[in-house]
Image (cartoon, rainbow, N blue to C red; front, side):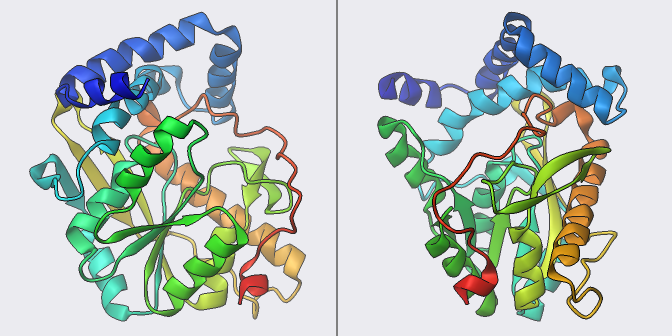
Length: 299
């Protein structure tokens, strides 16, 4: 399998994306469960099917890009393949020096954001991204190579990883999170996401609230025909509540999760044709054996 993965990584990006589009449609047509979930999630969000339908191929492209993306050497540059819009918001946040939390949904080629940030901003301020090791042993080294490069560091999804991110923020560093994924039980709260209760991580908001870091929204749009990507940076339209606004910790967590979900909804509505609608966003969280890590526990 590793040989096939590396062979795929040598194909042109446009070829991989074409094959991925076919793969996306095969998965959609071949799995009634996946097809029903995708369509139900689109309907729940009240997004027109015509706008969301391209997401079927986009999901396959996302998978097909991974061999190329993860097999890139540490010194290989993205260059003109990635264009930034709104990078002045990143410049301002980094200049402020109080730490930065970057949030992005499962939209477009979200995997490339870390590498692109490291290439452009990593010398000024490295980025730490939360991750879970690949389940397949042959894939772990490849993923580690992709996510550990100059200007880009990784933190495991454990209490030690949370501590690592807090240290980075308190030194004025940058971290990246995908807050629209379902966290393990004890690491989130139930909050509305497109009008339906979804188990939502509390970590993103707590990191901002307890370290005083800034936070920005990022989304990476895939351009057609292998022409590259556009990473758009936006400040949040709605700020997170602080402990002075809501002293009750449970209510604070609920209100904060609501803000995070609404910001993700706004990003997704801007480009519904590249969102991962087939993700099981409304599932129950998986149980964990260890206590839920929070920034206050890790301090």
